[in-house]
Length: 331
Ligand SMILES: Cc1cc2nc3c(=O)[nH]c(=O)nc-3n(C[C@H](O)[C@H](O)[C@H](O)COP(=O)(O)OP(=O)(O)OC[C@H]3O[C@@H](n4cnc5c(N)ncnc54)[C@H](O)[C@@H]3O)c2cc1C
Image 1 (cartoon, rainbow, N blue to C red):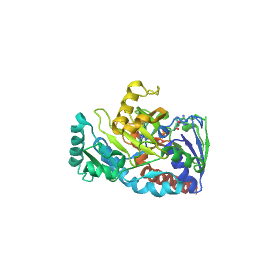
Image 2 (cartoon, protein in one colour):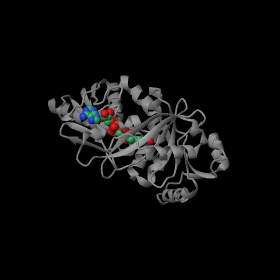
Image 3 (cartoon, protein in one colour):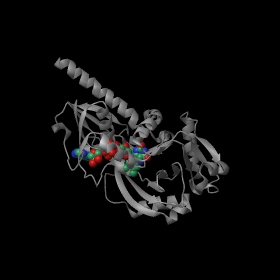
Image 4 (cartoon, protein in one colour):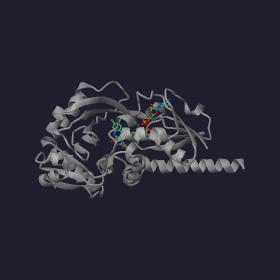
């Protein structure tokens, strides 16, 4: 089977990997240069956080996220990608305390009972670096994170041939199977960009094992761990398709949140300030749909990493169905 994929971000690479393993001859066409990635996947914090997302997401996302948490570890082990599935912690500072209570109540109203309150002692046991910093917090035991850039790098030599600097219209590609994974670059009707800004820092004075979130009136701010003392501090959530650099306001908010979380962030080195666009439809749900001969995969919004393994299963089965029916028609 000869496969052409437009877009070598998260889904393009994952699909290419899976189909290559099955013996397909896969070519990916990527608009960006190899050394100047433009994917949302490159910027993302890649938290696997179904419960944190639950109050603001469709229940389908929660279910897919839950199922994907089981599917990720063997995939990441096979690829040698760092990850953690030890849960996450959620805190609020002084005036934002009621937001944490409201969040907990909304989980309860949805029937989600796994989030549990932890006191200062337990916070210290879970994250010694945060001992004595918070009197209470919420522990969400079934959440995790993965190293997004290690994943993209590990997939690169395994997903087929990536042709960089090659912006394409997938409708012009010819192959047995053509897949459109261009994210926001697809510019499809109804698809919008949701701007997210994130800051990468190296903070050897902070040692967090799991993602930690802080309630905030506009969005939850978080520090997601990476190997080598690095953290992704994120992320803003702005209804805008602007890719202009990170604003001063956003940088101040993100860095203040990090500093409020742990004073060790004051001495952190800022490695990068980056902006990405989350591709989203009006219902913020992903879509896998045929546009003539092209299979479109888009609308992963802020949940791409969270739900990717389950989507991958759907996509592969969709491709197998179409391949089998075209083979039958030819016979
Ligand atoms: C700041 C931020 C934080 C995030 N945090 C999380 C998180 O914690 N957890 C989570 O689950 N998700 C998170 N996400 C969301 C996640 O990154 C996306 O859902 C996911 O990357 C979407 O995958 P995709 O393959 O559809 O698109 P992308 O990863 O954006 O890949 C699309 C690719 O297509 C290429 N392309 C575009 N146009 C063309 C063209 N014409 N021809 C060829 N190639 C083209 C692009 O250059 C890009 O490489 C975050 C996103 C952002 C921006």
